[in-house]
Image (cartoon, rainbow, N blue to C red; front, side):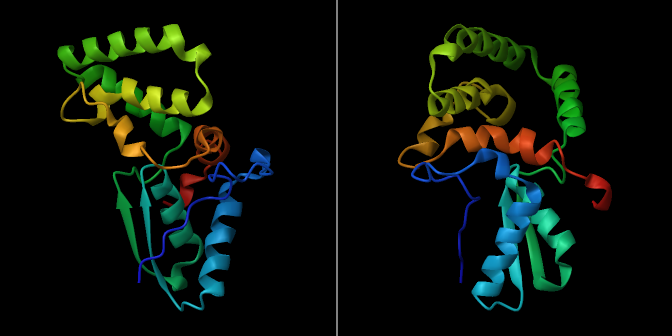
Length: 171
């Protein structure tokens, strides 16, 4: 049985959500409450991208309730220090072609970013980063989000509110 859940506040219809309540501990508590509610003795937990940090932290917090942990395209930690390392690694090893495309994308994005709503900003920011993530550095991954309702304000605040305060000492 596969059950997909997302973090509180990600549904755009949840207009009453207070973004300041977004914390790693609240997310872990929500996952544990769901496991208990569903009466599962153990779960296999999966996290993609920065949500992999959450899956790993749940595993560390509740090891007796986790049978397996799967991280998909996810670093083991997504702290400010990791992102600094990631940026220096990118600067050192990004091919000249990809670096040129990235700089061109950033210039174009910076010209319009202040006019974008949060969803357009989120999608545009990820399109800018195509040279960092996709085999085709010109790939526009925006279509991957078509038809998906999201609260981009919560997504964009996930990293500073959750990951930047992450304690990676247990990893």
